[in-house]
Image (cartoon, one colour):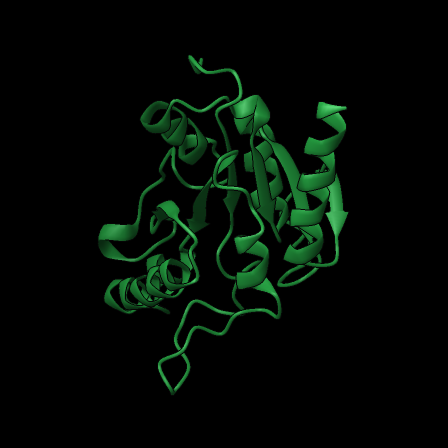
Amino acid sequence: MARIPDKQAVFLELDGVITERPSLTIDGEVPYYPGAIESLQRIDPAVFKIFIATNREDIAMGRLREREFKKFCDRFIQDTTEAGIQIQKIYSCPYHPKGRQRYRKDSVFRKPAPGMFKMAQQEFDLNLARCWMIGHTTTDILAGSRGGVGTILVETGAGGQDGAYLVDANETVPDIRYAVRFIQSHEMSLRC
């Protein structure tokens, strides 16, 4: 349990929420959804730490190389830092029970398991009951629910149509812009 009751965070899936895909464009740019960076800028760093929580089944299945994903993440961190956004940490799980070679294994960090949230709680002393997960799949939402955080499903990416689990988010919104607005208004309502 967090020593500071209001130590909060926003966890976000990377592709499907912030970016269209986990690979750079031909020009070496990150393919952001419209308004994604501006939305991250609106998250008050005095209130919320920002984390990325992403499964990398594409790495496990050989569709994406780990070094390509690292290059993508490096550019993402560069872009967010330049925009004044501090990403505390990127939690990613490249393992899958049906993965190839060294990636073939189950992991407590693979969503829908809550391992990423529990690790962040330990490393950053978070109060998970005051945290949020913004995702685009039912796997994201179930993981957040199992981790004890509030869940917001965006209609970008898979938009909850992946069919992996029957689960309802606390809120469903069109995109990351609306998700951040929802969190802000929820926080405002708690302060009134």
